[in-house]
Image 1 (cartoon, rainbow, N blue to C red):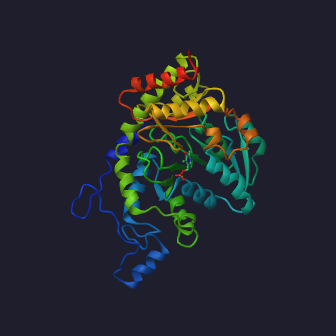
Image 2 (cartoon, rainbow, N blue to C red):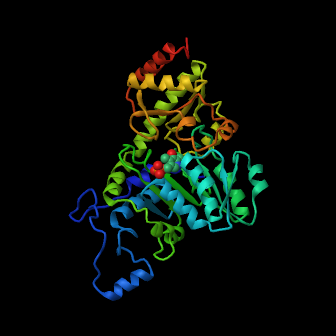
Length: 401
Ligand SMILES: *Cc1c(COP(=O)(O)O)cnc(C)c1O
């Protein structure tokens, strides 16, 4: 496959404000005037380039952000939403109706898992959770009712890597759409180039990068984005989780530094992962050669952005994990907080927080230990210094000697 550089695609995307402003003007309106009633009627019928109706449908600022995201994911079109969950739920509800089925990886974000497990059955949509690193599992449950295969590029929190080309080839054979959550690996992976049909992101995380808002996006074909935003039938239009234009404007500005941030997040996470492993600790990081999908990730990734900013460290039991996190916060390593992609390091115990929607016995089955600490490694300029502080905390808790 030819090399692809998402950052250059965004770099070439220039949009100006009304007065040549280097940042495009922010839409400050919910509704738009028309020169004639006929023109308005026409817009209800089909989209007209450069023409807007009502800001829940589309507004210029959200369109600018969506166009930049489509460039990043190398696809035709995108839609922005008020949260990652809004992007995920509207995508799924656009693709599935009562009686349909979904095959999902069993290691997915807790909120998505809860939506699949607890909410979709109310609409008569059944989800099969399988270990998607083994496609035979998908073969056992696939049927004429299957409409979607769902996975995350890097799964939360064990950082398993999805084999997107194989999953997509399998899905195509059966006429099924592949939806991939790329929240953990923007720039690093381009799932649509690898065969996926739809990419969703929680922009709350790396893409925005400043933990000051909640937002999401759907990247796909023109056709699918038109379906989502269809005035009378589109899930994104009718469920109404529209992104506010002032937020869209600030996310667009942050998107322009995403490539630099991803490189630094990756470099710092790689440094910590190597360090933890040299101490004999159990660490999950896809950049480590002994990670089960290290070679797979290498074969799929865009060069130059590293292996991502997320790592998981297993310190044995919940008490030790909790004590370590509290100490690290006291020593200013970062914050004990859920979420990820922030400029400071964030750590949480997934078993008790972000993956707590997953029942205890299933957590055990997927290898989600009680002593797991998930790190979203920050943009620290001096990672050696942070690493020394973490080691101090570990010595005091006898995690290392
Ligand atoms: C946070 C997250 C979501 C949900 O996004 P929100 O913006 O919080 O709605 C979905 N998937 C993954 C992988 C996430 O980390």
